[in-house]
Length: 269
Image (cartoon, rainbow, N blue to C red; front, side):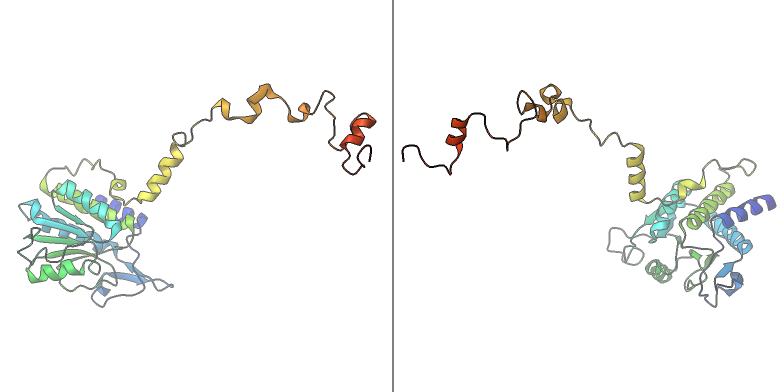
């Protein structure tokens, strides 16, 4: 277990899970390790790992996994929430939270879960408020400036970076499967953390265009090229037999020159 903890903490350092914000809530001071010269609070990753283990045990206590709701209005956590629900059997709610989901019994989307997991207590404030009305326990990823009202299990971590959010949900899903017995602790989990990362659709489209440029550029037919028409003749070669004729040169012969001169008087005048 100690070796697993060291490896997990190293992964948290790589994903910048320890970086907090410049502001610090007075209830989050217990999770702050120190403060940098820039004023950024550093989160104690040992306590983060311990709270992840506590949260995993709370999740395992729910007999029916579908009674667990995982919510994230933050876009960076939408993919991680869907992946976490895929491996644990929870109910994902990525995107906008529909008001009245836990309190309005008339709506068709009314739910009665036994546990709520949120990515950010500030952005998911509506879900936390409804959970407090329905007396539902809440697990939340809390940064140093996050409010802790109506939060039962706070996991101190950076909840603003896409890598940090993905890693936390990956660790939580792995520990839940360990406790349920579906995975063995001796054998590692073959699912990579990269699958939990949020991906920008526009960036994916740009990569596809860079990888497959031939689909959009059709080759031009040979008939459309001007140089190939007329057997490759030169326009300058069509001026006459000599090829050096000029428009300003006078025509040969005096009679023709007089007839072509408009300013000359008419014959017999």
